[in-house]
Amino acid sequence: MSIEENVKMIKNTIEEKVTLIAVSKTKPVEEIKKVYDIGIKDFGENKVQELVDKYDKLPKDIKWHLIGHLQRNKVKYIVGKVDLIQSLDSVRLLQEIEKQYSIKDEIAKVLIQINIGREESKTGILLDDLGELLEQCESCNNVKVKGLMAIIPKGTEESCKCYFMKMKNIFEDLKKKSFKNIQMDILSMGMSSDYLMALQEGSNMVRVGQGIFGKRNYNI
Image 1 (cartoon, helix red, strand yellow):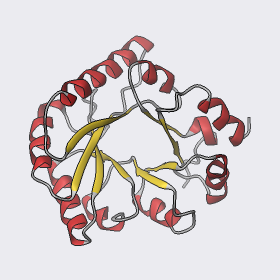
Image 2 (tube, one colour):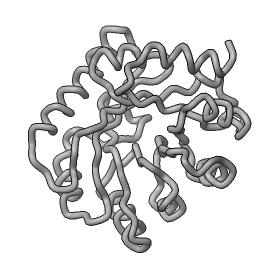
Image 3 (cartoon, one colour):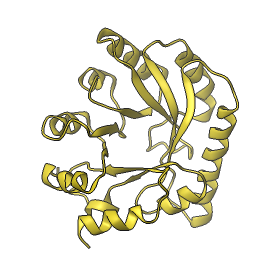
C-alpha cells in the first residue's frame, strides 16, 4: 500500500483523542511531506542531528518529538525545535534540559521514559529510581512533565498486554497525586506491531514508523 493508504488505514483504527506520531527516522523529507500533506502534524525522530536537519527543511507547524535516547551534550541543539522530549530517563539529563532551556528562556515539555521490562539493552528509568526523578522534576522551572513513555519488551501477546497494563497502572497512580510541574496527560506506548493492543490498554499516543513509511533504511 502507499504511504497515503497506510495513514488512512491507521487513522481509521484510532480514536480522535489519540495522537498519532509518524516515526520518520531515516526517511527522506519528500516522504515526510507526503504524510504532512494528508494532515499529520506530529513526527518522531530518534537522533538529534537528523531531527535538526529536517526541522530546517520542513513546515514550521510540524510538532517534532524526540523519541530516541537523548545525550546530554545534544540537548542544546533541540531547544525551541522540539515539541515533546519523550525520553527523559535520568536526573542528570533532567538537569541538563533545565539548564539549556533556562538559558534560552524556553519551556521543555517532556515524558518520562520508563524501562518497564528492566532490559539492559534499552534506555529508560527503572521504577526503583522514578521517585527521585519525580522529586527533582518538581524543583525545575523550565521543564514540565506531561506523562510517561515506554518501549515494552518483545514477547507474546499475553506478556505485551501485561507490560501495557503495568504502565497504565503507574500512569493512573501518578495521576491521583499532586505534583508541581508534573501532569499525567500523555501515555505514549505502542508502535507499528502492537499499537492496537496498547490502545486497548489505555495508550493515548502511538508511535508508528514502519506501518506508515514501510521498512526502515538501516544503512543511514
